[in-house]
Length: 112
Length: 112
Image (tube, rainbow over all chains, first blue to last red; front, side):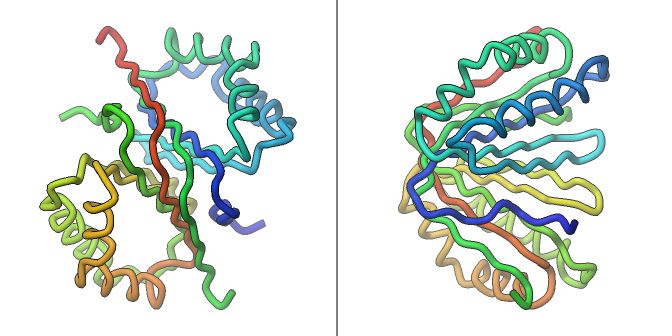
């Protein structure tokens, strides 16, 4: 499967942008990340997510949701809340979270 | 200088999220990227930007603006428009652009 950006959907929808710098602590991190992916994928208003990390540098993850109800359900998920607590205690040196309403979006695919 | 996520500002403000997959063509790309950074930094409503790219994978760049006027000025900048055209012809396999209004944001810094 080739890597593709998440498509542009019909606005309005929501976007949560999580920008982070990791600590060197890795215990439990990959498993938790995979589990969070499973949980959020079960959210009926979840549209997709995408992630990039510069080695030794910044990571940016963007998750897209249809509406506030689905984003709230994700924020309030108990396993997700436990993961966020562990993120602050173990995995992240620093992070910023931005929640925003998408007003417009468009995509480009070569020869597409 | 240590790497830090862009801080959380007082909402509302704007966020442009550019997610891309690169071609292998690199000629002119680093120079253009540096020049775009210079131009956008001269925009009085520009708040900051951050970027991550997984080697061989997805890149995500997020730029923050105070208001629509400053984002429009950036979009309409003639050098930026020429760079976008060259991006479609040479540098990007695919991309998606999302423009959104930030409703809430918060940050975390370890021991901060």
